[in-house]
Amino acid sequence: MHNLQVIPRERLSFVKQHGLGLSPACLAALSSVSNAPAEDTKLTFTGIVRLIPDLSTRCKILWEKQQEMTLADMCIEPGKPWEYCPREVFRKVVKILKDEFDLVVNVGFEIEFYLLKSVIRNGKEEWFPIDKTSYCSTQAFEVASSIFEDIITYLETLNITVEQVHAETGKGQYEVVLGYTEASTAIISLIYAREVIKSVARQHGMMATFVPKYAEDEDGSGSHVHISLSRNGENVFMASGDSKYGMSKIGESFMAGVFNHLPAILAFTATHPLSYERMLPKTRNAAYVCWGKETTEAPLRTASPPGIADGLVNHFEIKAFDACANPYLSLAAIILSGVDGLRKDLSLPKPVEGDSDVAGEKPRSVPDSISDSLVALEEDTLFSEVMSENLLIAIKGIRKMEVKNYCEPERDYSQPEMDAFKDPLEDFYLQILS
Image (cartoon, rainbow, N blue to C red; front, side, top):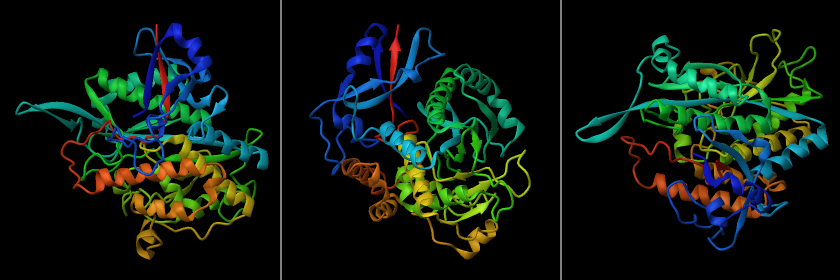
């Protein structure tokens, strides 16, 4: 779920110049279920932070008659970014990669979610999957085809490319694969695509939920992210000739940096207790610190999609990424880790050779809780290069509050708050009314 402020169109020029005022705690200290600042964040309801619309992201809301939306930056004053602004942190990291190595990151997101229908039982509304068939079944798509026709139409109108759609492994679970593009554009597409999917589902009387673990006996939903590097428009992640792993030295060093920092990265990409209930062995969801070539059980895998020569890979995938995470902070952490690998000229360890290898040799497990990922983040000093001490304190405080909210009481899967989960540092956008 993203955060939203609504303004009439006649106020847009004023807001562009001066911003909208909100308290620091509202923007960066509220947990997913509380209206009080998370403990230890050092943020309160005193003071004002301004939301400044980024009109380069402005687009029409296609399912409304006269409304538009635009992402916003968090600023102390116009032209002066707030240290907690996720978009500014991301910009800093992208600039470091470009300035030091003349590289650009390209990204493609997969969006997994469940489609649920409302049923009244004994006078109470309950939500159930719209389908119960298996992975990639024709029936699963048939029952949702009209929904996806509208989703794809809206996304194409917003210039968001859809590469494919299919039923996932869960009952009523689907995946939309977005097109591959420069990282900042990919994030904007991800944010707007989720809004489109949720809105179209509501128009059809359904609910779309992106929660990492919708039901105890169903597979979780992620936002797997595919990453490559380019220079002057050319993919430089892929080897240009013979290579041990099919990737260039640049690609290997970048990926090795991500591998080395993966436990701490999870503090940014897996931000809710339910994120860790998704990442279990034998679920293709990143339970061990390892990597493999086309190994879906590994948290990091190199990929050779159709059209790539045998033995070569043109990008890698990160599994531990879901809809609770802020995509700007998450990609900033991933890219900065890759920068560290490039600076140190790191190499990857030996890859695992398959699912049985991963489960059999039992490599070191990824953090299996927010608490463990916070320990890893505490021990990893890399991220303080672009994230202020105050921002890291806020992130840790919010994560600890999520643990308190969700891990102390016993989890009830019967009626999950399916549209409520979010990173409190989630991106704001403005809705403009005519």
